[in-house]
Length: 435
Image (cartoon, rainbow, N blue to C red; front, side, top):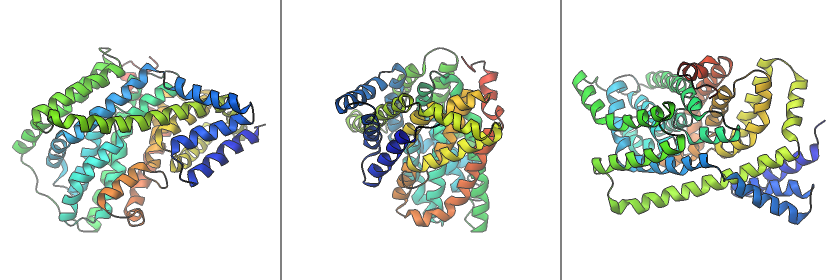
């Protein structure tokens, strides 16, 4: 039987603090402390929480996160996003809903390079949002496309959240996770493009002119230095040239040199870029530390084992168990940001799915797709708020065009859940699975 008291204390205290407007990281840390206070003295509980937050950050793999955050900031300000958009425009700009398709393709490329949904949403919304509105697109549709497509950066590598999952899972290969994200990420983007084409035809949005082969070639050559980062980072990791942490440092150096080459960033701009990256890193690291603390509290109270036994007692059918886990994770994503959700729920659900025969790499991608959907949903959908803020509209107005995009994200999630090879084929092909 599940010991309900620790679970109730943890959940209720977390929700009360969240409703009161306490920052999520502090909600996680304080609810963990309240739970421990019922199992040990006050001084021991507070000491344990502080120790667990500190030790949770004591990981070499986590060094990759501040470097990738910094490289993402440099990209968004260094002219790289503009060149990716120009290249995407030559590929899909002539189709119905061309600007929406450009947004999706550009977000996928930006996500594949920057690894950040927030950076992608900010860059694409700022550059393409006004242009879409000027061409006759509704700002709500533009915001909906930008919000949902930006989340593909969590699945398409390099992804900070996949690095966090590797840590939380006890060492699933980062190279395998990075390769596993490509097909699900591209599949989700293609579904979004189909919805955008149908929506654009229905609302008679303008169609751009087809680019000549020469224009495509010129824009491709202009974007090659930016796209080359993919080969350097992912190729280096898969080839064993450097680790993910070393690759993140290489990404910073390369993007910095590229931005200087494009003359979009100068030395006087660097302090502001570094400061913004430091602020983002501090928020992410506090979330990671607090979440690692809660993961330890869950383990201390045997909650993961209890939940595992409960789910397996309800059914031994793999399809049913995976459906229940997906529904729980979709609900979690509504209330919790991606990083803490990965750290808290990986130890709970990973033992269950591995007992059912699911590969940990495959589960990592399923988990990520769930949390991508959560980033677009209120009340804690960070990408939703960024996209709405940049578009200068409201959540209530964005919901209508957002719903069909939500539905195809859920379709992609269930396809990836029940067709493992969509995630595992590339890692198996390159021989990095379970390495």
